Image 1: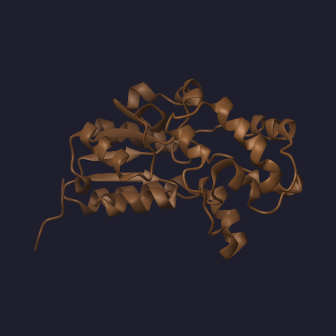
Image 2: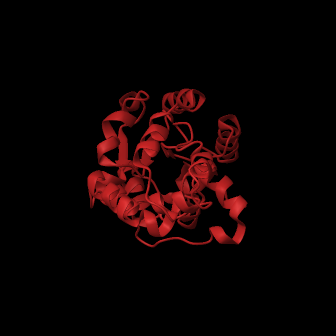
Length: 238
C-alpha cells in the first residue's frame, strides 16, 4: 500500500477565509434597491456566485438562472492589475442601465459598502500561527485589488504569519487560473500533492484539486473548516 504524501505547505485565501465573508448583505441591498435578483452581482463581478457564501445564497435562490458568467469581466482585469479602480467603476456606471434596468445609485452603494467593514476570523489566524510554529510552510494566495492593499493587509498580522504573499494584482494572474497556483507552489518549493489549499470559492477549490492539491472549501463556520484541515493533516504521514 502506497503511503500518502506528507503535507509540507498550507495555502490560505484571504477574503472569506482569514477575513469574514465579503459583501455580506449584498443580496438584501440589491432587493431593497429594486434591482433584479442577481443583477448587482453580475454587474460588479460578472457572475452571481463570486462572493463566497453570500453569492452562493443568491445563486441558490436563482437556480438555473444563476448559470451565466461574463468571461474576462472588468473585475477580473482589475484583480490582475490591468486596470485601476477608477476605470473599473466607470465601467460599472456605463453598464448599469443594461444589467440593472436603471442607473446604479452610487451614493446608496457607497453607503452600503461603508457599512460592511471587514472582520477577521481570529480562530483561523490563531491556527495559522500554530501551523507556522509546527514547521509548515505557509502562503497567502489572494485575488485582490491594488488600491485596497494597504487596508486589507492591516486587518491581521500578515508579516508575522506569511513570508510568501501572492496577490493577483501584483503578479498579473488570478484564481482559478492554474498558473497562479503553480507560481505559489514554486515560491513554496513544494509539489501540489504536498500542499493544502483553503478557499471559499468553489471554482478556486476545483482548480486547485485538479492540480492535485488537497483542498478545504471554507463555508459559514470557521471551526468546521479548521476541522477539515486538521483531518487532512492527520490523514497524511508527515
